[in-house]
Image (tube, rainbow, N blue to C red; front, side, top):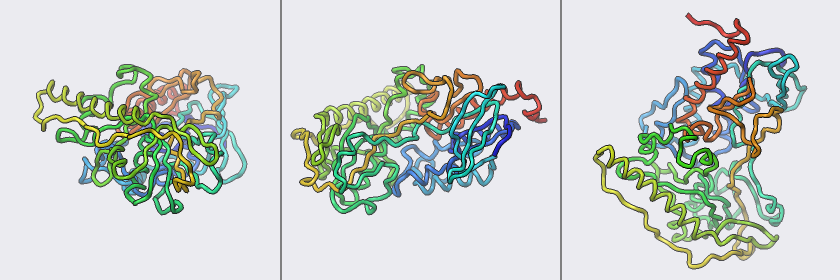
Length: 426
C-alpha cells in the first residue's frame, strides 16, 4: 500500500467509520486503516454477559439509528455487533483491514507521511496524505500496575478486556480490582454465578438505573447534560478526567449496589495499593468510596427533582438511597492463600498510546490539544475521545455529531488544498 490519498482515517471503530460516512457523502477521497477488523473491540473485548449501560435509543450512527422494538432496553454484546454489522451492509467504506499505522510525521513537501504495516507481518509502506483523522480512541493499552509482578505465579491474572465468563477462571475466589463500569459489572457477573468475589473498590461514582418513572440517562439527556460542551460543564475541563458512573443494563437494567453485594457475601476492600508476594495490601478507603458513590447517586436524583419541578412535569414521588450495609472495619491486608484467591481481574482501565504520532499535538499530560476534535496542528484531527466535546462524545449518542463536525472541517480543508479531490455534488 503506497501512494497518496487526501484523507487517512486511522481506526475502524464506530467513530472512524462515522467520519468516513460523512467524507463519502461529501465525495472526499479517503481511506480507513484498521489494524484488525471493523469495530472488532465490541466482540473482542466484551464479556459474554455484557450489555449496554445506555438505553438503546442512544444508539445513533450516520444514517443508522436504533430501529428495534425496545428503545428503552439495553442491547447485549451480540445484539450490538449485529446492529453495527447491519450498518456496514448498507455503508461500504474504503476500508483497509489488518493494516496498522506505525508512524505519522510531517512530509517534507507538506501534508503527512503515514507508515503502515500489515498486522500479520510483512513489508511496511508509506502513504502520503493531506489530512489525518486519528480514530484510535482513548482506550488503547490495558493498565496493569507494576506490583502485579509480585503476585505469585500460580495465581491467574487477566485484564477486564480478556474476561469472558466465570467458567473461564480457575476454581476458587476471584479478586476484581476496580469499580468503574467494567469492574463493577464483572464483579456482579461473578457474584451471580456463585463465585467468591473480593472487590477492591475505587473512587468511581454510581447512578440509579431508574428514577421517578424513567431511566436516569433519559432524564439526563432531556436535561441537556450529554450535549453540554466540556468547557461549559460544571467543573469545566477537568470533567474529562472523571470516571463513568457504574450501573448495569443486565436483565432489563438495574442499580449496582455494592453494599447489597457485601450483605450477600461479596468481600469489599479499599483501594489495592501493593502485593508482597503472599499478601495484598489495601488502603483504608472503603467507607469513603461507598459514601462518595452514594452521594453522587443521590445528588443526581436531586438534579432530576429540580428539573421535574422547574418544568412542571408529572412524575412519581422522589426518593433517596439509604445504605443497606456498612463496613464493620477496614482490613488492610489479605493473605492470598487464606482467602483462596486463585484469579485476579484487573479492571483499572486503559491508557492511550500516541507514541507513533510525531507532532506537537499533546499537552504536558499527554492529552491531545483539540477543540471539537480539531487539533492545533494543521491537518491533524481526532475523533472518539471520551469528553472530546461533550459527555456524549465517548458514547453512541455523541459520535454522529462529533464525526459530522470533524468531517466537515476536513472536507473544507481538503477542498482548499486539492480542488478536484473534493467532488462537487449536484
